[in-house]
Amino acid sequence: MSSDPADMKAELEKLRAENEALKRTKEKGLSMKIGEKGGLSVYGLGRFPVTLYKEQWSRLLDMADEIRAFIAANGDRLKSKE
Image (cartoon, rainbow, N blue to C red; front, side):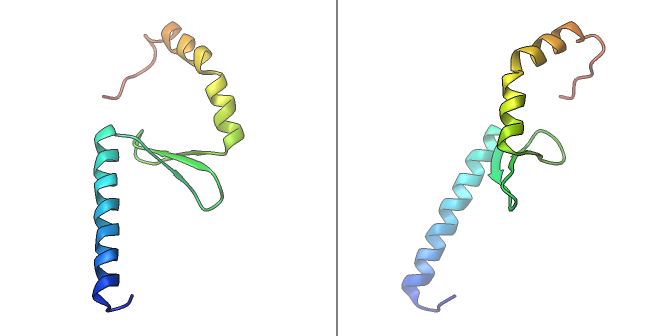
């Protein structure tokens, strides 16, 4: 990194903006990131991120109604983590 005051100020502003974005994301509880291998990771659901490739996300999202129906039908056997 350069010791030029203008470069340092620009870097500081960039870091401040990133910090504010992270704070806003944390308030929502969930965030997304594209990993090194091109998978989409969703953070905030549990201890580890859920990472799938776009085709896998599409298949999962296409099943949203079925998943909701399954949860409703089996709600008495499923545990909740609040």
